[in-house]
Amino acid sequence: MSRLAKSVWIRRASAAGFASLALCCAAQAGSLSASVRQRDGKPLVGAVITLEAQTQTLPAATPVAAIMDQMNLAFVPDVLVIPVHSTVQFPNSDPISHQVYSFSTARKFQLPLYRGRAYPPVMFDQPGVITLGCNIHDNMLAYILVTAAPYFGRTDAAGEWVVTSLPSGKYRLRVWHPLINEPQEVERDIQAGTERESVDLRLTRPLRPAPLTGRPHSWEY
Amino acid sequence: MGILTGKCTFMLCALVACAPAVAPAADWEIELDLRALSSDGRESFLDNGHGKLRFDEDHQGIQLGRLRAALNQPLGEVFSAHVEASRWDANDKNPIDLTEAYVEYRPYPRAGLRTRLRLGAFYPPMSQESRARGWATPYTVTPSAISSWIGEEIRTVGLEGQIDWLGTRAGHRFDLELTAAVSGWNDPAGTMLAAHGFAFSDRQTTLFGRVGAPQPDPALAKKELFHEIDGRPGYYLGVQARYLDRAVLNVLHYDNRADPTAQDPAIRDFAWLTRFDAAALRIETGNGWTALLQALDGATYIAPGGFWLDWKFNSQSALVAKRVGAHMLAARYDEFAVKFHGSSAAPGSEQGHAWAWAYSYDRGEHWRLALEWLRVASNVPARVNVLGESALAVESKLEFSARYSLNGTF
Image (cartoon, rainbow over all chains, first blue to last red; front, side, top):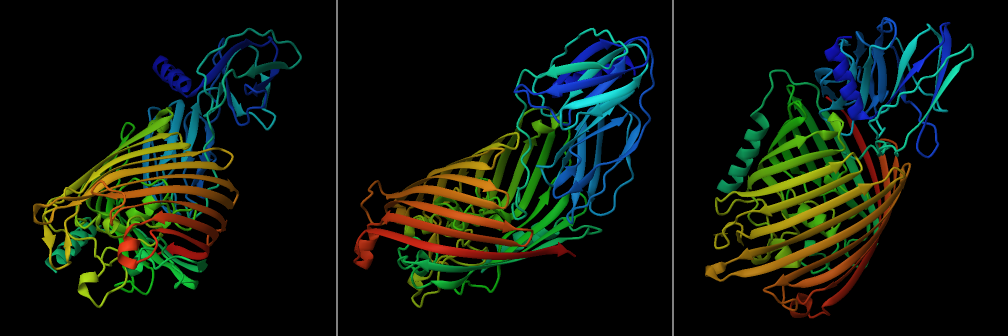
């Protein structure tokens, strides 16, 4: 990743709310368990965790062909994490038309009014957070996080994420979630052994309010 | 007739101005809303009375609430045409008539900014209550006094421009929207407020329709409200601020800039100079609660022979609703007042308040069932002078609404 691209990635991610952590794993291959909790102790479900190698060069994860659907006037999923150079197709499963756009720095694009058929996939070749909207339905909001990290994932219902078979070295762990309210970075050294390393993060501020869901069909907005 | 032709021509131009080379599929919707009700309302304002309810005691039992048809036709990539038509009751001038018809230009956002233009006939963006399709309220069956009046007398026939700053699409918590419009063909706006004051009604006056029943005596003929009388365009300016999707604040200043000395013998009405400020705040929580506050303050004037007459009016409304899945309970309180020439005791003046309680159930895509109890207490001096009745009246109704809607594409 170029210095410029990295700088953009860090700035954009910070603007959306970020916590990051540098850690050092043992010389042997190891595994890592990360746990993210909200200020009140409840698990933060669906938080995106990326793990970037600091002491050696590891290639980004293999690009994928992902799908961001539109159902019941909402993007599905609401957050999509993909390796850099991946493609995303935007089918529309609603009976009405949508008009998808992004004016995020990492990828600007627009898909003219459509329903049913999908346009050709959109390529995302720059790391960053892309905010998606529909020009017809302003309540529709979703995010695509494009990462150059070799390892990434999302926390489960318990707020945890586990990665195994990590090559030895030093890694930077970042946490991103659209509702995190505290742009900050935390650095910590952790000595990895043969046991699984664990990282526990706890937010210090409450989350932003989640988007409202479940409006009846007859409501226009 | 010339005026009518002018309004028709304006709207037709608006609808065909952006005719596409290739028209994408259109969305249509048809809706039937039937009511079953019990009412002790005085003779309705819709029948020349001083009752505050759409359905009075002579209109109980099964009634047509609304028959509605809507069409959204994309015109190319960034233009679209929107048409709303309704039938309300036996007093409609036309079997079915338009409540809104406009073309919208909605280009893609650029660098967080989006412009929008609407050309045609539509509602000014001042109601946080009328958020369901067809400018209806989802919270109750009968809208607030403010929304009832807007639906009865106000329509933008003209050009409206908006600029949106889409902060929430750029990592911020706020969006901001500025609106400005130039409009005409609404010079009689204010005449019903002076004639019968505020009312509680979901009936929206259609663009080519009238308020109320036809009368044998043309002097008593009810009004056709969407006419240009003095050739002077009006305007409004508005601001909307949104905090995520949880809170919306609207402020609007409206002035139809009518010449109050002008009159049109063809429709037997003056150009009513109507100005008002309106504000609305809606807050929603993640656990289904909604709080909605609305306020309206303004005045309407005519000056026959240069002698100015003024009616100052104001209304406030507070609504609380709780939604649990498809079920919703709502309670609303309204206050309203009209003061003619500075005297609250003069004919043409009034004051009152109202309570509404409603339960509604949205069953899937097609059905909405709602039950509402509405009680309006009003003090109208004209009841004494014109009807020989007590000025004070308390009217109530219990209304059940069953609405079925179908939609599809062409």
